[in-house]
Picture: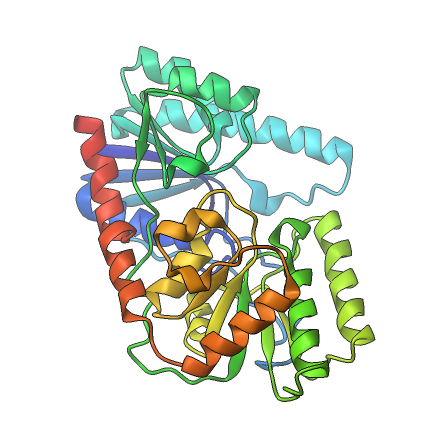
Length: 371
């Protein structure tokens, strides 16, 4: 197979999309040639807003290191400032021009297309790929069903998603594959350190419900006399709305006098995130019910107990790990009970090996094109 991949970013250090670097490397293992067209490559990441828990000042500039049978092409976002509306319009025009240039110029170097999370690429290129007889696959995980997705569904030959809950548009083209967790990367074979009690990984955003964890820590520290409890938030704020929410969380921490108990690490390079999983007693993910959040699966791969609000995990996690309601008292009780057990959850890693391993995912995707 000669594969064309379209994605947002190729950057192994990116805090959000760094995982996809591993996907590309794994595709390269099973494909004769892989051509990657990305919106950008190696963009500088957000400056860390760390509270100095790990003494970081900034996070690394991005880069990639891929096998020789991989070619990476950029639409050019990393070289564009986009400070004004005029810049944004010109930048979009540039991206679209480069998109069509690359899919035409490289058309003899691929026979199959895999679009990652951007249905607009299917909309833009789908008719050309149909004419050129290139089979089109779309990977999509999001609750949103918009016009772009509906149009992409008509043009795609096959659609991949991790769980039934993560793709809300009815279609016969859907194939459920599980997530792709790199089991070589997400493990704690080097040992656990227990540097802190509670870990919460994910971008700072109201949908992630980080306020609930702060309220639970407040109960434990100021009512249950657990003055030494430490909780760490790992993740940046990517939008103005998210940055406003982050400041609200910081003010709440200050008002509750929890500065010695709660730390905001900011964005962390994807290559470094595993040490946080291996440095915690437990992880907390407070997203509402929906698709299976990848960071929960990463924690499970590291044999880390994880408390969730998302009922999607009720067939994956033990019942005692799932919150009945968004209740800080219930969360505080579970934190105490589970952290006191302080034992690796080997059965959680076995579940990831069985259903969500990266190697199996890539093989399933490739085999689906030939089915």
